[in-house]
Length: 118
Image (cartoon, rainbow, N blue to C red; front, side, top):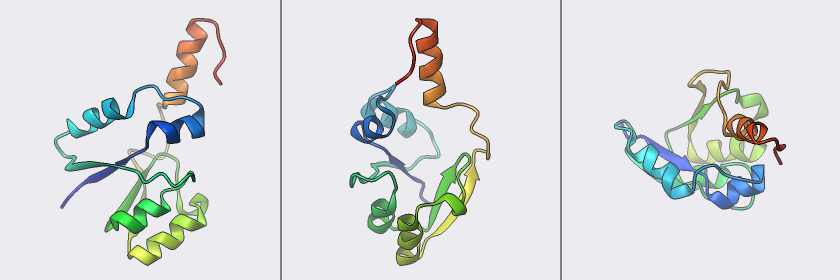
């Protein structure tokens, strides 16, 4: 088995959230330090907020999605890419409820200094 983790770029996070907490290289180093992670690669950034191009390019056997993500809310582009790649998808990795998020951490930090999140 080979566990490949796709990591979003700083630019992608800025487009999605307006910020990032840790730069790409720092997030990559944390993931690479986990003994069960074999490889960390960049999630292909095609200007969208889905990973269809990464699925088509990396062609994983299984796409594992964490948190409250499920097939019913998966973008059609990702569903189509899964078919093209012959890839299965599993959901709820790490649990179905997101107990901690960078958005929560960011909002808590801003509240501590009296500002509002973007």
